[in-house]
Image (cartoon, rainbow, N blue to C red; front, side):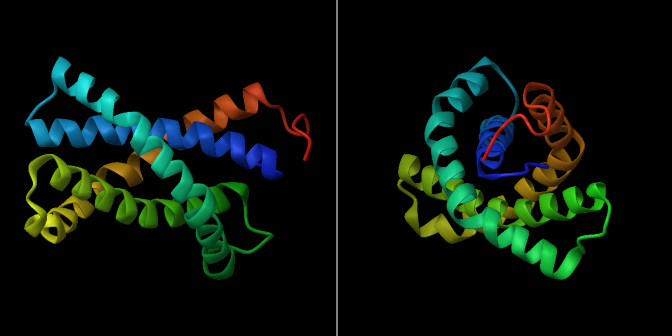
Length: 160
């Protein structure tokens, strides 16, 4: 786990990149009805704006609230690092899925003009995104990003 603000920013940049890229490809695949080269193109073209939006939401809104929630209600300082990681990750995924599902719904309405469908699109996006984001975060992105992060930045090497 990151030990200071600089480490936290670097970790957030890496994690957001991994999660937003994967979830962008997943959502475009759902929208287009299957995976293809067109999905890769559309997902990659939509990625930069989604990434910046997700980074801002994560860094300025969700991260602090999720950590506060996790350390107030789910874990204690003496709990294992694994329990802390799982609880903070779960606490991050829930609000990020809500926010990014709305982002996707708005993006879809901008493209289609079907603004009357915004609420229904958002509500149908939430469970689809949650069932992909949580397992991906816990089983793939989290372990991968923690490994890359600690390999590139051994503990104590990034100063506050």
